[in-house]
Image (cartoon, rainbow, N blue to C red):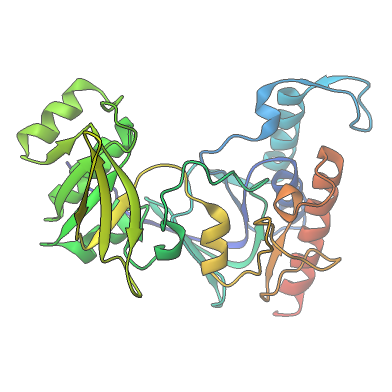
Length: 309
C-alpha cells in the first residue's frame, strides 16, 4: 500500500471551514486578489441538512443547501480553491503559519478559522484531549514514522480507519486495532482480509476507556468482555473527527469554557494574523451573522497582509 505524497501548497489566506462564515471570508479574500485556500474538513455545515431558510436577506425562502451552494459558487468564481480534507496538525504562531492534512502541507500568511459550533465531547475518550500531540494522534501519515518499531493502539470504525491501520503497519509500527464501539468495522471485507493477512491484532469487541500519563501517554485502559485491562502503548491513533477546539488550544488560540474561540471586534484572535468567524466564536449563531463575521475577518486579514508587504 503506497503512502500518499505530501503536496506543498503556499497560500496568502487559508480559511479553515466551508460554512457561510468561511465561504464569505474566502470570497472577500479571493476577490481582493489573494491566493485563498478553503480547507473544508469532513464535517458538514448545518446548511447541508437542507431546511427552509426564511431569514436570510434577499430570499423570502430558500433551501439551506442551495444557499450554501451559492456561497461556494461565489467564492470559486473569484478564484478561491477548495481542499476537502481535515486539519491534522496546526501551527499558528509561526510566519508563515502551516496546517497539515493527510496529503497536504499548507503554508499561509494569514489564517481564518471558521469551523462552526464546537461539537459535543460525548464521543471522546477520557484523557484524549489532554494528550493531543503527546502520544495521541489523528494522522497515520503525519505521525506514524515517529513510532516505527514501537507499539500503538489504533481506534476507529470505518474503511478509512482500516486504511490508516494498514499504513501504520507498512511504516513498521506494531498496531493493535480496536473499533472503539464494540462492533466490527464497517470497512470493506477486502480491507479486513488484508489487515488479518498482515498479522495486525484486530479486536472488534474492545474499546478504549481512558488514556493516562505524566506529560505524555503512558497507560491506556481497554474494556473487553466487560473487563478492564491496562496496556502501555507508546501512542494512541484515533481515526475519527478531530476535536478542533483542542487542536486550536494546542496551537495557542484562546478558547473559553464553551470551547469558543475568543476574538476582538475585528475578528482577530490573540495570535497575529489569525482570525475567527461564525459559530466557532459563539456569536449570533445565525447565517447572516456568520457571513458578516466572515467578511470582517477577511478584511482584517487583508489589512494584516498589507502591513507585511
